[in-house]
Image 1 (spheres, rainbow, N blue to C red):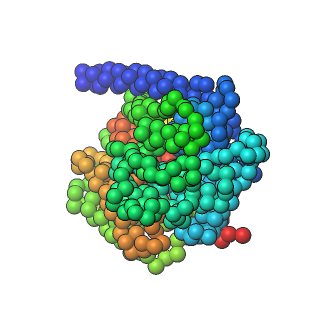
Image 2 (image 1 turned 90 degrees about the horizontal axis):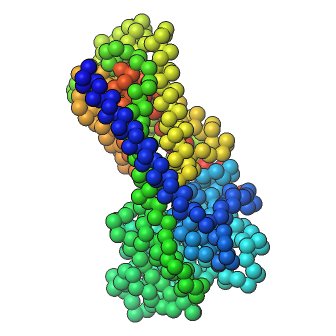
Image 3 (image 1 turned 90 degrees about the vertical axis):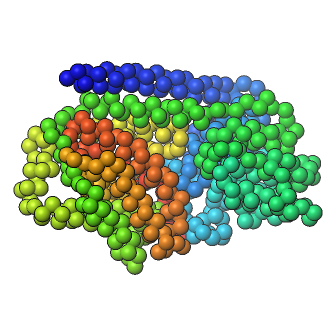
Length: 526
């Protein structure tokens, strides 16, 4: 009892600390927006947000666009920083992304496919900005991340009114020695291949310069004739962290100031640490909040599998699933590789369920129902607990993600996709939770099963590298959600004693997260 009392006091202190951290982080994040006006609108069916200073004359227009599987909130550090330095920013959701209800058409790997559709969409946004936000003869600039760097480069190459281009984590095959005008590449310190690409982009404009001789942080050429080029490296960050780096933000402001012959004060929206603190606090708060869940089982339920059984139940599906799916068409959902991920989860989970049953001595239906607790008071309690955990994931954590990271509450057009995703994640998470929990469960078992699932995805990509290439881009997202929902699972199991509470909640939350991440597709262009 004394230990229980100490644990309760510890959780109370943890809850207070988390709430204080949430308050501090929100104060800082909303403080970044003081003096900046946001206006949400729709531009030719494109959801967009205009950022500009509340006081004074709005400065030049900058179009800001996100990368693959991104959305407007992900670009807020740049949008707010530029607006805070007097610029007028138009940020928008590309087709198939964020809250854009319209799917992306065409081949996403071809320059004349989906990429051309996104260039045309950028042109429509620019036409609105030209008509409503700036004078007829005023120049504009563009800034884009990752996939969008290719789009904004192609857009800028077609127009004479774009005087500067900033590509963050830039890869743009159409860049040539003369266009676009005044282009800078900003890359993360861990993006070695993109650093080499940035050096190539600079060197191609100057006959006497070799890519390996291009210096980071040095400007080549002249803004006056549009030949200025530069590669800047934000140290210690990767493909997403580069968006929050103060180096990235300062480089972007300085580049545009030179292009527009302005003198800004160089203020940056240092949101990265505060977003990280807010997310960490909300995740931490789930631990003491789990005490409010109903106790489902006095003795912890679950397989309590040893390493040998775990290797069979999780290891066999890890190897078998990609082999089974290799010859099977899996493009049944209008979303980039989301259909494959859903069916991979589903097949993996069903195989694990069969192996759980087999290795448990092939129990009967009544034995399974008694162990799982699917009826009576026990069933009602685990459903109530699962609903509460799901609500925390989607409402509390989801609100933070939607406001400060990326769109988490999409347009209604995505709901059927999420339901299809749940059909895949449900068998996986229910089987996995039961396997890795229970009396005598092995330390590290939960992490081990997740590693096996990631290995399974890796094997799938190896078997079909061309068709599943984009799967590699969402693996970091899967890892993050495995880690976060894994913590939730541990805390929920500790207080409910039943693995299916977190299993059901994680299945829904994971399906939701993946459903809002994958870009929606609409078939061939036209």
